[in-house]
Length: 380
Ligand SMILES: [Zn+2]
Ligand SMILES: [Zn+2]
Image 1 (cartoon, rainbow, N blue to C red):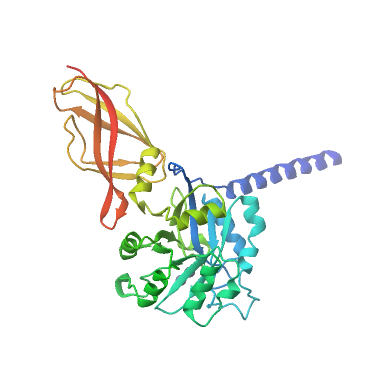
Image 2: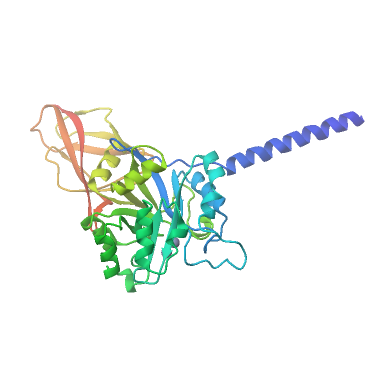
């Protein structure tokens, strides 16, 4: 009887430990982000502006790594402030220490961590991130231009953070300090998205001045305190189109201006990248491609990307009648009914569905035109 009881307890304990392990497995899981690659480049999901307790953040550096892993990111930058260190009375702060503390976990979780720092000055010139820094102590300088020069000498990728942050109505101002750094060739990028804020003025500057577009969280709290990342929702991020999934790959891509910015259900970037992202994420299947005069058929359009594409008809198609608006839902297949509005055609004919994808933004106020090709067999 006694040994039976012991066996019983061992059995219950074993059951309990299995369920605890299972629960942990579920909690520690990663949601993949399903953007396609673009020709010649891998699409990397990056948040290149985050904080920890080593400046004014509220989390330990390793927490940032696991958050990033769970949310399907490839890379993050730990960019603690250089000049603003409110926790110095409570802990020993050394520049770059937050980055060092992430390396073990980052290796285990295969997250790339960019060593970085946020240069933190009053406006102008404001706040700037220096990525791929090798010696943050060299950026501790009185003169702002010396800070930037010392970053540049280290090969850092330097971008202007949240340009409109301190301006009324977020109307970003290009100051003479910005112009000096830009003319010296030391300013390589600009945040067109910071947190949940999209800045069209900075977007236009990125286009006109050939700066790399970035969109980052600038997260200080645990991610769940500031962002809903459940049920397919996501943090703002920079998509980097890299030759390889390495820090060098990211650096090379950023200097070559190969990026786009994802905020909520919008993607901001050049047509060169948004166009292949769109075409490579949709697949069309036509079960019955035969169209009788006045007849109809259903196109099955699958969107494997994490963005629901919002389409508006650009012009009427001659061959068929199409809906004015169409939503290609992220991760789903939708049906599109096409009608043969003419009896002019016969035989297999390539038909173009001419839409604008209003949430793929190529310039402030301009969206990506797409011509979706399908072959239909018109019957007489
Ligand atoms: Zn800042
Ligand atoms: Zn910041």
